[in-house]
Length: 129
Image 1 (spheres, rainbow, N blue to C red):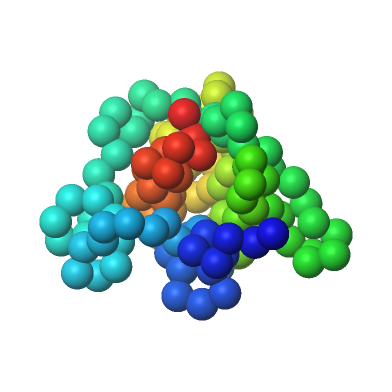
Image 2 (cartoon, rainbow, N blue to C red; image 1 turned 45 degrees about the horizontal axis):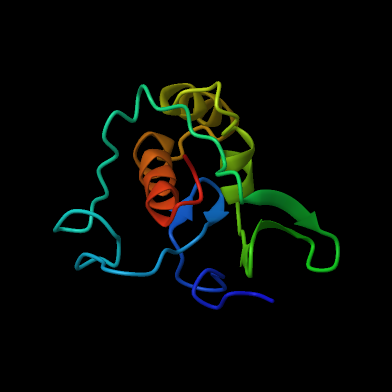
């Protein structure tokens, strides 16, 4: 079962190299969740070491040829490099370390701004802790 609100065939939030998960709920004028104006602020982002919540699993779907976030009664299809970002969320690396590693993998991509916002939205959804 794929959750249509979580799947992003078009118009999702961009991360380096592609599209990622789009969160539902309140959004700013540019479609991004968070503070007014649409920019999501991640408090203590530099010190936070994100890890998937206990009920969330990152799995590869051989049929769809893409990674999924699998949760009780919900599946979210990941697009682009969203899974590359989430695979670095091991509870050991800080957001700053994740950004630094992705900046090496994707030179010139705006990872310093997009990755913390992406991770913050996933934390708001309860998919990261």
